[in-house]
Amino acid sequence: MDEHEKAVIGDFVENEAIEAVEKEYKASRAQHTLTDELKFSYAWHLIKSRYKNDISKGIKLMEELVKKGRDQRDYYYFVALGHYKLEDYTEAETCVKRVLQMEPNNQQAKQLIDLVHRKMKRDGLIGLGIAGGTALAGAAVLVATGAAALIAMGLSKSK
Image (tube, rainbow, N blue to C red):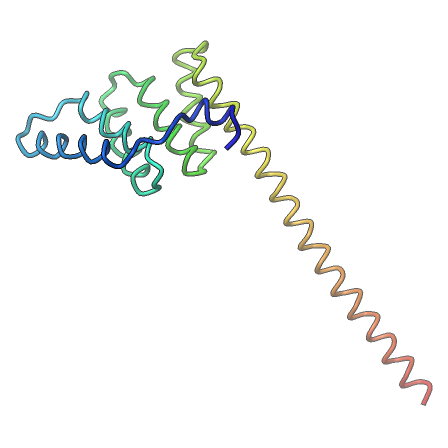
């Protein structure tokens, strides 16, 4: 992770902090006193985790908040961040574009979409490189097979 990416993504939240908020979240749900603020806090902690399962769970919780229609800009931003961390750049781009529609000058969203586009471009180039390398390897096999066939034909005619 380069310095620019670290500045946008931020630090990981430690497991102890996630567990503390999770305990509060579960108790609140059990007592039917869960607030959007607590759900947001738990989802945020999960998205800031270093573990993909936590991040996925955080995205789902944040998407539930998006459906409620309040504070959507913040919710969409963290859904985008979660997808970025899961390397789902297409979904991250979709979500961060929603943030920019709501708030075109949002600097966090501008930085995140820049990172998303850099990763998409890099992965696209890597994908092309892999495809090109595979095509070259296939062509080499064909050339080698053709050369072997020609040699075999030449040897059989010389007999």
